[in-house]
Amino acid sequence: MNNVATPLISNTLRAACLERIKEAQSGSGGIEFLLLATSDGYSICHTIPASQDIQPSRLAAMAASFSGISDGLAANANKQSANGSIIETGHGLLVCRQIKSSRHELVLLAAYDKSTNHGLALWSLNNAAKQIANVLEHYN
Amino acid sequence: MTPVHNKILFIGPMGAGKTTAIQTLSDDMAANTEVRNSNRDMYDKATTTVAMDYGAIQLDDEQLVHLYGIPGQKHFEAVWPVIAKGAIGAILLVNASQPDWQNDMLYFLNAFPQLVTSGSLVVAINRGSDQQQLQILELLSQQNLCLPVLLTDPRDRGQLVMTLEILIANLEIETLIHE
Image (cartoon, rainbow over all chains, first blue to last red; front, top):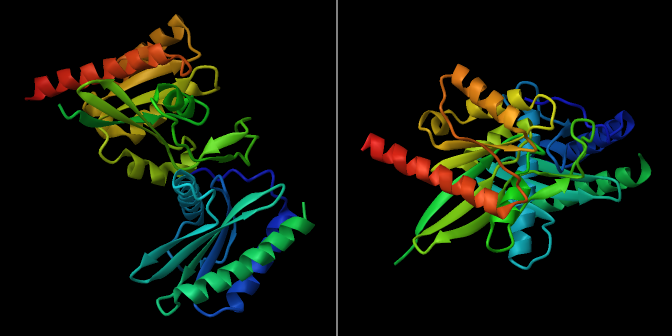
C-alpha cells in the first residue's frame, strides 16, 4: 500500500481539516466516521476509531474511485459533474461529497449508522463540507 | 450476425499510457475518470486516473471489444479486481522511460496471476528499444513465463490494433489447447 504523503496538503491544513471533521461528527448524531481524501485517493484525515478494522488509506482510494465514477456517470448522462453520491447498505448509508477549491479537489466520505435517514445524512454532510470548504479558502 | 462482446483490460503503472491507448483505440470518445494529480513528487503528470477508462472497438463484423483501463497507482489496488471482472485478457503496458519499469512489470504480473498463468496477457512496451524488449523476454523466461512482448506506442492505432489482435489470437490458441 502506498503511504506517500500528499505534498500539496500542508500539515496546518491537514490539522484544520481534522478539527472540522471532528466538530462535524460531534455536532451531528448518527455519524460513525468521516474521512477526507484527495480526489486522487490519498487520505488527509479521518475520525475512524482505531478499534475498527478499517484501513483509511484503502477507503480513501476507493472513495476517490467512487467519486471519479460518479463524475463520469454524471457527465455521460448529460448531467455535468457530480456533487456527491450515496451508497445504501443494510447497516447504514455511506455518502461522498466532492469539495473543490481553486487549489484543492477533495472527497469527504461519511459513514452513518442504520438509524440515520437520507435527509439527515445529506444535511449533516453538506454542513461538514461547507466547513471544509471554508478552511480551504483560508489556509494553503 | 450478432457480434461477440469481449472485455480486454489495460493494466500497468501510472504514466504507462493506458488512458492514451484506450482513447487511441476506441471507435468513439473514450470515457475516463481523470482528476488532478496531487502527488507530483511521485510522478510529474498533471492528471491521473482514479477509477477506470472505458472505450470500445469493433475489430470486425463478428467482434466488439470493450476496453477497460485500471487506475495505475498502487493505492488503487482494491479497485483492480472490480474493473477486471469478466475480462478475457489483458495488455500490460509499461513505460520503459520510467525508473524501475521492469519491477513495475513484475508487480502487475503478480497482481493479475490468473491472466498470466492462463496465457491471457501481452506485454506492451511504451518508449522501449529492441534491447529492452529482449531484456523483458529474458526476465519473463526467468519467471518461467512465455508471453508475447511487443514495442507499442499508445498513440499509434495501427500498433495497438496489432497488439490487440495478437492477444486475441493468443487467447484463441490457449482455448484450443485446453479444449
